[in-house]
Length: 263
Image (tube, rainbow, N blue to C red; front, side, top):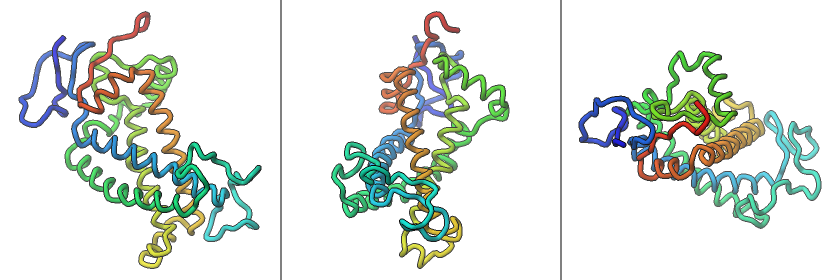
Protein backbone atom coordinates (compact mmCIF):
# COMPACT_ATOMS: atom_id res chain seq x y z
CA UNK A 1 0.00 0.00 0.00
CA UNK A 2 1.19 3.52 -0.73
CA UNK A 3 1.37 6.44 1.67
CA UNK A 4 -0.82 9.36 0.60
CA UNK A 5 -1.58 12.84 1.85
CA UNK A 6 -4.53 15.14 1.20
CA UNK A 7 -3.42 18.38 -0.43
CA UNK A 8 -4.83 20.43 2.46
CA UNK A 9 -3.13 18.44 5.23
CA UNK A 10 0.44 17.64 4.19
CA UNK A 11 3.38 18.69 6.36
CA UNK A 12 4.96 22.01 5.40
CA UNK A 13 7.64 21.87 2.74
CA UNK A 14 6.38 18.68 1.08
CA UNK A 15 5.36 18.76 -2.57
CA UNK A 16 1.78 17.92 -3.60
CA UNK A 17 1.04 14.36 -4.53
CA UNK A 18 -1.26 14.38 -7.57
CA UNK A 19 -1.41 10.56 -7.67
CA UNK A 20 -4.52 8.41 -7.98
CA UNK A 21 -7.32 8.38 -5.45
CA UNK A 22 -6.43 6.81 -2.12
CA UNK A 23 -7.35 3.19 -1.52
CA UNK A 24 -8.25 1.25 1.63
CA UNK A 25 -5.06 0.60 3.58
CA UNK A 26 -3.30 3.77 2.39
CA UNK A 27 -1.68 5.90 5.08
CA UNK A 28 -2.62 9.59 4.84
CA UNK A 29 -1.67 12.65 6.89
CA UNK A 30 -5.08 13.59 8.33
CA UNK A 31 -4.60 15.79 11.41
CA UNK A 32 -2.18 18.72 11.52
CA UNK A 33 -0.23 19.54 14.68
CA UNK A 34 -2.45 22.45 15.91
CA UNK A 35 -5.52 20.21 15.62
CA UNK A 36 -3.86 17.45 17.64
CA UNK A 37 -2.55 19.80 20.33
CA UNK A 38 -5.95 21.47 20.63
CA UNK A 39 -7.73 18.10 20.79
CA UNK A 40 -5.76 16.73 23.74
CA UNK A 41 -5.46 20.05 25.58
CA UNK A 42 -9.15 20.74 25.22
CA UNK A 43 -10.04 17.20 26.32
CA UNK A 44 -8.11 17.64 29.58
CA UNK A 45 -9.51 21.13 30.20
CA UNK A 46 -13.11 20.05 29.64
CA UNK A 47 -12.73 16.92 31.76
CA UNK A 48 -11.57 19.00 34.74
CA UNK A 49 -14.25 21.63 34.11
CA UNK A 50 -17.08 19.12 33.81
CA UNK A 51 -16.09 17.20 36.94
CA UNK A 52 -15.57 20.34 39.04
CA UNK A 53 -18.74 21.85 37.57
CA UNK A 54 -20.77 18.87 38.77
CA UNK A 55 -19.46 19.42 42.29
CA UNK A 56 -20.41 23.09 42.06
CA UNK A 57 -23.88 22.07 40.87
CA UNK A 58 -24.16 19.72 43.86
CA UNK A 59 -24.04 22.77 46.15
CA UNK A 60 -27.36 23.96 44.69
CA UNK A 61 -28.85 21.40 42.27
CA UNK A 62 -31.64 23.63 40.97
CA UNK A 63 -31.80 25.80 37.83
CA UNK A 64 -33.90 28.91 37.20
CA UNK A 65 -34.66 31.42 34.44
CA UNK A 66 -34.28 35.14 34.98
CA UNK A 67 -32.23 37.27 37.33
CA UNK A 68 -32.98 35.57 40.65
CA UNK A 69 -33.16 32.06 42.03
CA UNK A 70 -33.25 30.55 45.51
CA UNK A 71 -34.82 27.56 47.25
CA UNK A 72 -38.36 29.05 47.52
CA UNK A 73 -38.41 30.05 43.85
CA UNK A 74 -39.82 27.75 41.16
CA UNK A 75 -37.03 25.94 39.29
CA UNK A 76 -37.25 24.52 35.79
CA UNK A 77 -34.85 21.76 36.84
CA UNK A 78 -34.67 20.35 40.36
CA UNK A 79 -32.29 17.46 41.13
CA UNK A 80 -32.24 17.99 44.88
CA UNK A 81 -34.22 14.87 45.76
CA UNK A 82 -32.90 12.17 48.10
CA UNK A 83 -29.81 13.30 49.99
CA UNK A 84 -29.66 16.51 47.96
CA UNK A 85 -26.44 15.60 46.12
CA UNK A 86 -27.35 14.32 42.63
CA UNK A 87 -23.85 13.52 41.35
CA UNK A 88 -21.69 10.95 43.18
CA UNK A 89 -18.05 11.53 44.09
CA UNK A 90 -16.69 9.26 41.35
CA UNK A 91 -17.76 11.80 38.68
CA UNK A 92 -16.89 15.01 40.54
CA UNK A 93 -13.74 16.95 41.32
CA UNK A 94 -12.93 16.78 44.16
CA UNK A 95 -14.51 13.42 44.98
CA UNK A 96 -15.56 14.69 48.43
CA UNK A 97 -18.03 17.53 48.94
CA UNK A 98 -16.20 20.87 48.77
CA UNK A 99 -17.66 23.84 46.94
CA UNK A 100 -14.51 25.91 47.58
CA UNK A 101 -12.12 23.34 46.11
CA UNK A 102 -14.40 22.73 43.14
CA UNK A 103 -14.46 26.44 42.36
CA UNK A 104 -10.67 26.62 42.55
CA UNK A 105 -10.31 23.78 40.02
CA UNK A 106 -13.04 25.18 37.79
CA UNK A 107 -11.70 28.73 37.59
CA UNK A 108 -8.07 27.62 37.22
CA UNK A 109 -8.74 25.68 34.00
CA UNK A 110 -11.55 27.97 32.79
CA UNK A 111 -9.01 30.69 32.01
CA UNK A 112 -7.01 28.22 29.93
CA UNK A 113 -10.12 27.68 27.81
CA UNK A 114 -10.82 31.43 27.61
CA UNK A 115 -7.32 31.99 26.21
CA UNK A 116 -6.95 28.89 24.01
CA UNK A 117 -10.32 28.84 22.22
CA UNK A 118 -10.00 32.27 20.50
CA UNK A 119 -6.42 31.46 19.48
CA UNK A 120 -7.48 28.15 17.96
CA UNK A 121 -10.48 29.69 16.18
CA UNK A 122 -8.28 32.39 14.63
CA UNK A 123 -5.88 29.72 13.36
CA UNK A 124 -8.75 27.54 12.11
CA UNK A 125 -10.40 30.39 10.18
CA UNK A 126 -7.30 32.16 8.86
CA UNK A 127 -5.46 28.92 8.09
CA UNK A 128 -8.41 27.46 6.18
CA UNK A 129 -9.16 24.55 8.54
CA UNK A 130 -12.78 25.65 8.90
CA UNK A 131 -13.30 26.16 5.16
CA UNK A 132 -11.59 22.95 4.08
CA UNK A 133 -12.45 20.51 6.83
CA UNK A 134 -15.42 21.73 8.91
CA UNK A 135 -17.72 23.72 6.63
CA UNK A 136 -20.36 21.40 5.12
CA UNK A 137 -20.91 21.62 1.39
CA UNK A 138 -24.37 22.57 0.19
CA UNK A 139 -25.01 19.06 -1.10
CA UNK A 140 -24.11 17.60 2.30
CA UNK A 141 -26.81 19.69 4.00
CA UNK A 142 -29.65 18.17 1.99
CA UNK A 143 -32.03 16.32 4.34
CA UNK A 144 -31.66 13.16 2.30
CA UNK A 145 -27.87 13.21 2.60
CA UNK A 146 -27.97 13.84 6.36
CA UNK A 147 -30.53 11.08 6.88
CA UNK A 148 -28.42 8.69 4.81
CA UNK A 149 -25.41 9.35 7.06
CA UNK A 150 -27.49 8.90 10.20
CA UNK A 151 -28.87 5.59 8.94
CA UNK A 152 -25.40 4.40 7.91
CA UNK A 153 -23.95 5.19 11.35
CA UNK A 154 -26.89 3.50 13.07
CA UNK A 155 -26.03 0.33 11.09
CA UNK A 156 -22.31 0.83 11.92
CA UNK A 157 -21.48 1.35 8.25
CA UNK A 158 -18.66 3.85 8.55
CA UNK A 159 -16.91 5.51 5.57
CA UNK A 160 -14.00 3.58 4.10
CA UNK A 161 -11.35 4.12 1.46
CA UNK A 162 -11.34 7.55 -0.18
CA UNK A 163 -14.60 8.47 1.58
CA UNK A 164 -12.85 8.24 4.96
CA UNK A 165 -10.23 10.83 3.96
CA UNK A 166 -12.32 13.76 5.26
CA UNK A 167 -15.00 14.34 7.89
CA UNK A 168 -18.55 13.32 7.06
CA UNK A 169 -21.42 15.77 7.47
CA UNK A 170 -22.37 14.52 10.94
CA UNK A 171 -18.81 15.09 12.16
CA UNK A 172 -18.72 18.54 10.57
CA UNK A 173 -21.98 19.56 12.21
CA UNK A 174 -20.95 18.15 15.60
CA UNK A 175 -17.48 19.73 15.59
CA UNK A 176 -18.94 23.02 14.35
CA UNK A 177 -21.52 23.02 17.15
CA UNK A 178 -18.78 22.42 19.74
CA UNK A 179 -16.42 25.09 18.40
CA UNK A 180 -18.90 27.83 17.54
CA UNK A 181 -21.86 27.25 19.89
CA UNK A 182 -21.18 25.13 22.99
CA UNK A 183 -17.68 26.30 23.92
CA UNK A 184 -18.35 30.02 23.29
CA UNK A 185 -21.62 29.62 25.16
CA UNK A 186 -19.79 28.08 28.11
CA UNK A 187 -17.27 30.92 28.20
CA UNK A 188 -19.75 33.79 27.85
CA UNK A 189 -22.21 32.40 30.41
CA UNK A 190 -19.34 31.67 32.78
CA UNK A 191 -18.20 35.28 32.52
CA UNK A 192 -21.79 36.45 33.02
CA UNK A 193 -21.91 34.63 36.37
CA UNK A 194 -18.86 36.52 37.64
CA UNK A 195 -19.78 39.61 39.73
CA UNK A 196 -16.47 41.26 38.81
CA UNK A 197 -17.07 40.77 35.08
CA UNK A 198 -20.66 41.97 35.41
CA UNK A 199 -19.47 45.16 37.09
CA UNK A 200 -17.10 45.91 34.22
CA UNK A 201 -19.28 44.55 31.42
CA UNK A 202 -22.96 44.68 32.44
CA UNK A 203 -23.94 43.80 28.88
CA UNK A 204 -23.08 40.18 29.73
CA UNK A 205 -26.12 39.88 31.99
CA UNK A 206 -28.31 41.62 29.43
CA UNK A 207 -27.24 39.09 26.79
CA UNK A 208 -28.69 36.19 28.80
CA UNK A 209 -31.47 37.90 30.75
CA UNK A 210 -29.90 37.57 34.18
CA UNK A 211 -27.39 35.55 36.15
CA UNK A 212 -29.75 32.62 36.73
CA UNK A 213 -30.52 32.33 33.02
CA UNK A 214 -26.78 32.41 32.33
CA UNK A 215 -26.29 29.59 34.88
CA UNK A 216 -29.01 27.52 33.18
CA UNK A 217 -27.51 28.02 29.72
CA UNK A 218 -24.07 27.22 31.17
CA UNK A 219 -25.43 23.90 32.44
CA UNK A 220 -27.15 23.15 29.10
CA UNK A 221 -23.91 23.79 27.18
CA UNK A 222 -22.01 21.58 29.64
CA UNK A 223 -24.59 18.82 29.17
CA UNK A 224 -24.25 19.14 25.39
CA UNK A 225 -20.47 18.80 25.65
CA UNK A 226 -20.86 15.74 27.88
CA UNK A 227 -23.18 14.11 25.32
CA UNK A 228 -20.72 14.93 22.53
CA UNK A 229 -17.87 13.42 24.56
CA UNK A 230 -19.75 10.14 25.17
CA UNK A 231 -20.86 9.81 21.53
CA UNK A 232 -17.34 10.68 20.33
CA UNK A 233 -15.74 7.97 22.49
CA UNK A 234 -18.30 5.37 21.37
CA UNK A 235 -17.72 6.21 17.70
CA UNK A 236 -13.94 6.01 18.13
CA UNK A 237 -14.26 2.56 19.70
CA UNK A 238 -16.63 1.29 17.01
CA UNK A 239 -14.60 2.76 14.13
CA UNK A 240 -11.29 1.26 15.34
CA UNK A 241 -9.66 2.85 18.39
CA UNK A 242 -6.04 2.06 17.47
CA UNK A 243 -6.23 3.75 14.09
CA UNK A 244 -8.27 6.68 15.40
CA UNK A 245 -6.09 7.40 18.44
CA UNK A 246 -2.88 6.96 16.43
CA UNK A 247 -4.07 9.55 13.93
CA UNK A 248 -4.74 12.05 16.72
CA UNK A 249 -1.28 11.41 18.20
CA UNK A 250 0.87 11.30 15.06
CA UNK A 251 -1.42 12.80 12.41
CA UNK A 252 -1.23 9.68 10.23
CA UNK A 253 -4.43 7.76 9.51
CA UNK A 254 -4.84 4.47 7.67
CA UNK A 255 -7.89 4.49 5.40
CA UNK A 256 -10.13 1.61 6.54
CA UNK A 257 -11.48 -1.05 4.24
CA UNK A 258 -15.15 -1.94 4.03
CA UNK A 259 -16.22 -4.44 6.65
CA UNK A 260 -16.82 -7.95 5.41
CA UNK A 261 -20.33 -8.42 4.09
CA UNK A 262 -21.02 -4.67 3.94
CA UNK A 263 -20.81 -2.34 0.93
